[in-house]
Image 1 (cartoon, helix red, strand yellow):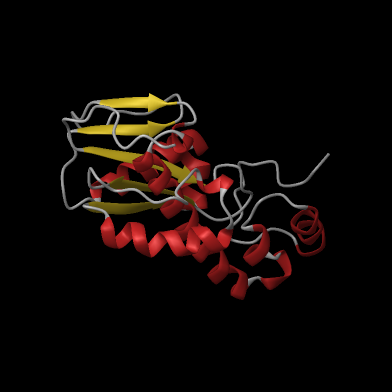
Image 2 (tube, rainbow, N blue to C red):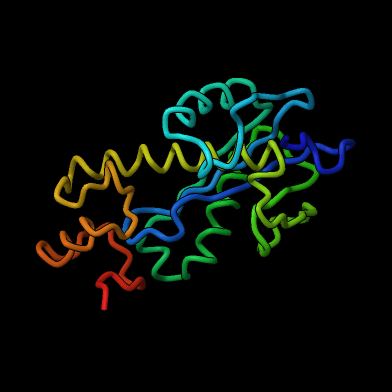
Amino acid sequence: MLLPYHIRNRVEAGCDEAGRGCLAGPVVAAAVILPKRFAHKDLNDSKKISEGKRNILRPIIESKALAWGVGVVWNAEIDEINILNASFLAMHRAIDQLAIQPEALLIDGNRFNPYKDIPYDCMIKGDGRFQSIAAASVLAKTHRDEIMAKLDLEYPQFDWAANKGYPTTKHRAALLKYGMTKYHRLSFRLFAD
């Protein structure tokens, strides 16, 4: 069962990202502040639930959250600052969107660049332990999937609606056949050895 709050007497925003390992498209992060009594039986790490359940959870989270935000860092910026820093920047941009200033941040993972003077805790596998991080995981994933579905309309040969920009066999084969697009991350190893 996911825990509602790390420390119950403060307003916490859970933060997570999606798309770090992709060859194309942006990295997307979300920040979510949930009400203290929020609970949903299907809420979990977005990687552990189906696409259908994620799409059902997204409007529930967005309507019930006290505040939520989504931050996007596109591939050209990823190439400039590297994927780790881009992930932190996407989280910062998500936190910037919050209508309520959190008193603390719960970050999925083991590293983070501080945001203003807000204290933070890094939580390894936090998206499977804390509701607010799981909610951020769902929002980051669904918002990124939506972006990749739109990019798929522009470049259908890469099958981004299905693979979301990850290095699947079909995606790699399309790279060999058609070459790179303006959405590919040039700092990544696009072609398999």
